[in-house]
Image 1 (cartoon, rainbow, N blue to C red):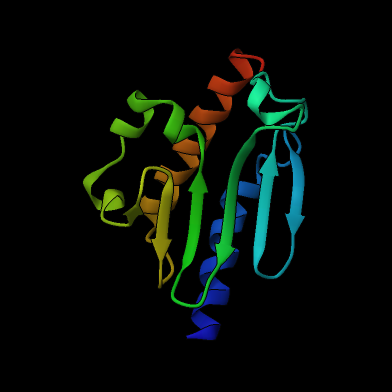
Image 2: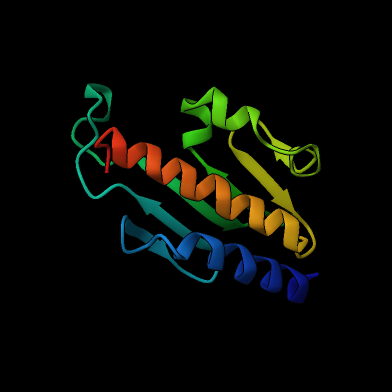
Length: 125
C-alpha cells in the first residue's frame, strides 16, 4: 500500500504544483504539499494570515486532495462530477487509495484552475 500511496501522492501533487508560482508554498514534504495565498487574508478572523488554498496530504488510510475554495463557492462545488463526488469526504476533500483515473485528474485540474481564477478575481491571492 505504501508504494501505491507514493504514486497517488505524486499524481495529486503534480496537479496542485502547477499553481505554485501564483501561490505560496507553505509545506512541501514527502507527506504534505500545501499552497496558501501570498497576501494576508481579507477576513479579520484570519488575523493577517494568508488564506489556505489547497493541500495534498498522505495519510494512513488514503491520500487526500483538499481544495478549500469549494467550501466558499457552492456553484463550483456543485459542478463536481458524480465519479469524483464518490471520492468526496466533507465539502472540500477528495480521498484516494489508488491512482486517480485520467478523467478525475483532469477534473481536479479544472476545479483547481477555476478556484484560482475566482480567488484572483476577488484579489484574495
